[in-house]
Image (cartoon, rainbow, N blue to C red; front, top):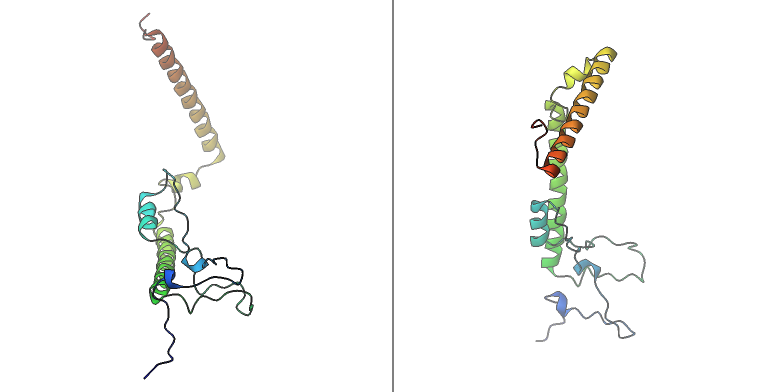
Length: 162
């Protein structure tokens, strides 16, 4: 008893995507984002991107669903690939919601403001002028200190020794 049931491919390698011209067509849904090689990248983000590849295009994203010229590979993709796409999308949305909730909580508890914001808010113009003057004096003292330290390193003699 023969069955006319069409079997779906088991893996992306089993999918025949040869066009009429004999060229091999690439499925965007099976391609992943490039792993950035940035030494300043957050270690947690680097680890997650290394373990969990992010697809360039999800299987449900099509430019124009009514365009007959655009290839639709949703039927040829395996359940595993579709599950991977859904998982990455759900994790991304969960991260977005967690960041949004964390931002609201930080705003409510005042964690986004500086420690002495109440002092800054109550300062008058005279107080600001005094603070600027003190800041300029401290910056000048620091510049003098750095210059003396540089001379000390160049000559090997301490500034107060002579």
